[in-house]
Length: 511
Image 1: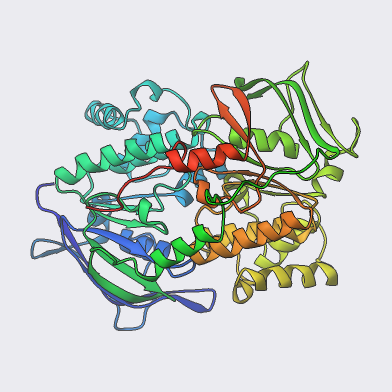
Image 2: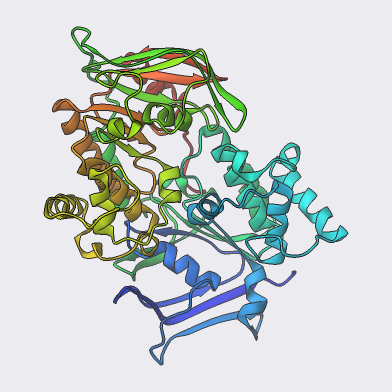
């Protein structure tokens, strides 16, 4: 593919659930351009990427046009789609949701076939191309591994390799850096930089300045499904978004100018892990963990992708159990207590929960289900269920989406709904795995303030993050996971890590 494809949209829109999620979009996208796609949650970023990719059709109005061109020649959608590679959490989650556990080499080969599953044999030429792209993404050693066994960062690299396999003219990157540690961010930077030198075009949706790939030169901002701004990337182009990020940090987590918050005395034991090994899919992810949490403590769980943060929270929640010889104690829930009784007192949010939540329920029922620790409702919501759900939907700005289904929401909107679900049950403890991923700056700031208030009111908090600025003020302890081992620190460690950049990636957003 020597001549790059151009894409045009003219007064195109997408209508979902009785409302316009995109309206009157007109764009000219030319080869070798690299765009940042900005906008708050629900602004329409993901729907625009799907519209450009040809995964959704513009709603007919009689005026809309979507045109793909090679030079002056217009081409059909069937010929355009192989020239577009799409990477996003929604597509990655789809494999987990349906249990499509392909070997990584076969997953990458599906990118050559334009399908989710491998429906026909791979040719010798295709096998060579798969090996090339796996090597470029540093995944050669994982070629035979099954996709669902990979760490989160490895899964994201595998999805990028899949998108790169057909040598696309355009990469559509939907929150590409979400949930990745500093090492995987650097690997993505290197891959995209090599592609940029070869003239790769891309559109990268992001909420954080740090999540815009280097080499991005243009910006497109959406607001309420309409184009708010189009221009060249320049210093200060982030405008309100940059200000919101600053506000989010200043009102939130790690303040090195103040002494850390720490309990004056040790309270009653809430959770205790004794000599626990933890296995996931016959693979040991934690070894010999001894840990306890007491009343008045709030823990940050840190570590690289694959260190076991998500598995640790699943252990506490009850979705995983320690191997024989280890034990987990929960205050007020002696051995033999049904796990459902514990879960009704704990709010839980995780990327896996979001991937699995494919039940066909309204957003109102999704939030109400948090009162019963269930996925969906076994019985009709009670009046109290509806009142509680309505209150939390209003708090998170989701009232107008109460009747919509989970798959009709943006990634950030669904994440906010799952946080609302966790809070609907008046939980005494919150287990939050990357809770702010996918949220725009204003929503991150509001959610952090809410979590800080809940901690002051006595709700115990355990939060796993990659970005220190995603921690609300009031964290007292740190559990750092590395090479199957768990190391405990007090909140002074957060200040040191914040100063040194030990767990927070730093780089200029664009050049």
